[in-house]
Length: 393
Ligand code: SF4
Image (cartoon, rainbow, N blue to C red; front, side, top):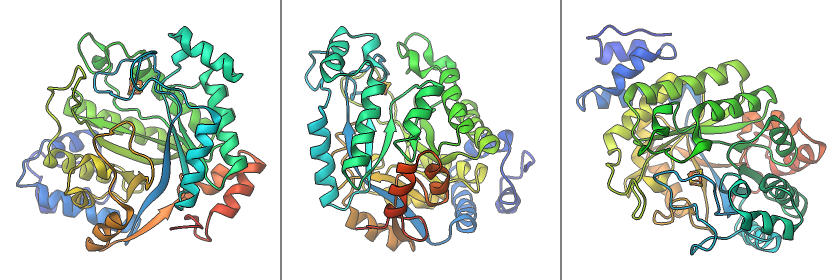
């Protein structure tokens, strides 16, 4: 771990910070640093990224499958979730799932990203009725069946994001999906208070989410998580969230990527008028995350950072996450993904090769394959010798 003295945020201080993973106090100090320090901080993060994965930036070519838009939580920034009967409230049928997956196959996609509301059947009798009609007892059971269908019937690999899961459900889903995810978002339980971002969102209790991520680690499941910045957290709370993620990875070695996502204010939500993190805040956070986690994959979504998204590479990220040539970002429908050719052009203009990965990162393929013979066989045909996507488009 590296310490900086209070007045050592200069080039020499940053160079010494690169020699080991930053400790909490230094990370807070850097996140508070002025715009004058930003170029040196970014240069530092870039040197660390180069040592980790030189010359390559990855993305996953995916289709987005919003299995159900019903959700029992009411996060203050979310436009994805719906109550039964609201416009856009929908649970996809197996035929609808397979139709999207087939279209994705034709466009060279290798990931079926399942995003869905958190256990809506606990709150809505309508969802219990839908599940009964489809022949399932719970949303997670239906999700498992759909992941299995995708694995059996297509060349795509599922990556589910279903919210909180028990130990048993993690184990079951890991047999039919090489990786899965749960955004930690924040470790601040302060944001559960009345009027805050996670007011009326019981599944955003940080202790419950940390438990899921830790259980995934015990099961050796390649896991995606991350932070959501600008939702009312303090600088210390933002860093504490990264420290928690890093700590779990140090203990279990299962966190395949850390997403740094910036809050975007959406019309019609309780947080519609809240300020969004600016470009400098985002870049500073990316760079500090890179210095804190020198050997972890760090991702930032290109569609949430306006026309100048390629500048996010300056913060030391090495992945763009899932990008779809077919389906919109249902979580942020007003922010379309860039065209993959454009993404490639901009990535190359920054001096990197853009490579298509599977939903599971190359270095985690073996760990994923250990969960079932079916997965192992599917991964063998989906990966190239280095573990990237075989049918890269
Ligand atoms: S962010 Fe997720 S958990 Fe929160 S309301 Fe939206 S769908 Fe539900």
